Image 1 (cartoon, rainbow, N blue to C red):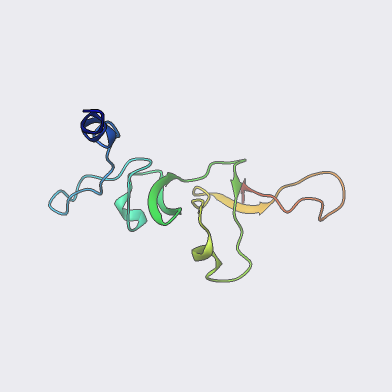
Image 2 (image 1 turned 180 degrees about the vertical axis):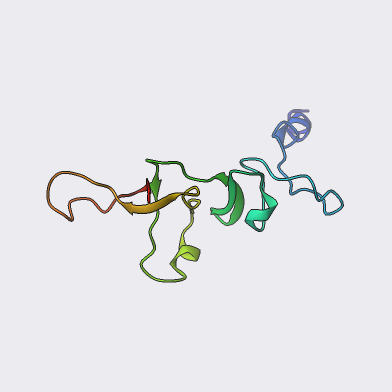
Length: 111
């Protein structure tokens, strides 16, 4: 009796996120939906790795922490990828008072 109740409510109670069907090209993924590429996601979102899958995440706005890659291809090694900075913004070292290398934190800043 108890096991049957768990089966009925266990996975069915959780929302299922699935990619848009191929026959519905106008449907774009919302934040948290699975994706293969950024074009699968709605405006203002990009497709980025989250654990071992990829989901639609928001494009970064001014002042948000971003990831700057020193080596080409390093982006693919991250488990939690961030999106790129929005148009008109660049990922630059955060300006702080103190020693030049006190912080390795980068934020999205105006060009």
